[in-house]
Image (tube, rainbow, N blue to C red; front, side, top):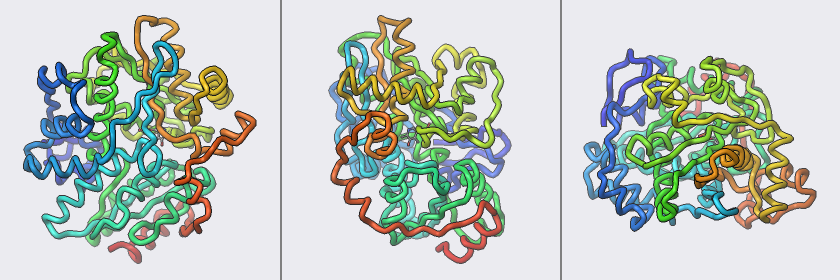
Length: 436
Ligand SMILES: *Cc1c(COP(=O)(O)O)cnc(C)c1O
């Protein structure tokens, strides 16, 4: 696979270089130069394929030239060592795609596990070591920590905004130890993201260390997120309807991966870009004006508190920069915290279904759309387990829902994190002392 930079200044690179660089030198984002369609035979037969088979076929057309077939097969089997995520029927034409059954109980496990597997594969061949730098607004950190834990020759540094991630999320990224280090930054998620971006552009650091990103800006995070859209389509294909996916969005990696699946030939599907009040993309779809929100606003769906979505240039590129093309496939909507709480309550009271604040926003967006498109089957993506947001669930529902054992045992572990001001020089000096 050849990749270009969305800023069109940096030269094209191959897959291996793109995943280790993370960002092109011109500060754009890497995008595949061409996105091949999967053969018709694949789509005709997709309902008979396992998640691993779907994943392999997608990888094979995208990166089959970069990794020999047998290696790619074992890599996919290692990264995707679980069943297809359940597609749960909530009511007649509303389904929930539950993406929270992985090791950190959020959909980011897909991207992180796959990326860790791909990086280990290439590092083993080249006998090099790397440092992963990653900013998290909550769930990225846990998924990356789990995905990369104890991987040889990889050190992971996670930046998170102090007081802005949930207790369980914080424990997920501060209790593993070994090759996983956590920095607690006095600032917002956008500040964390800016520090990481700056480190990647810093020549001194680049000369001294091998740096790599693990945010959804990394192309190796993006590709595996297309697998579950195709698996969900396969599960519902027999209904023979038009489909709509409602995606709770922050940095828009998840939704961009869905559009990637469309470009690879996934039939008849509309997407809903559902956000909280950090509604930059819904506003753009409405007005054609892209105006980042800085600083981002804090909400109860904090993994989506993003004021300048990092994947937006990719999303634009997938539609050739053409707003009216984008609007044919993509519908924007946004909801505030009160509406989000109503969504959580409604799902529980009407359908006995517990859902996290992020997923509730996707549900609300879907419901709105289906009111006017009754012939369509809707799937909202549930991006995290509700128990990761317990205080919010308790205050919204008036009782404390059960926590899975895996999360409960985390709460007794001791947090280890380094506190730091939002200051690049402090960050740089930490990196100089701690990277491998
Ligand atoms: C990261 C995250 C999102 C947003 O996903 P993007 O790919 O950044 O748009 C939504 N929900 C949860 C629970 C998340 O962790």
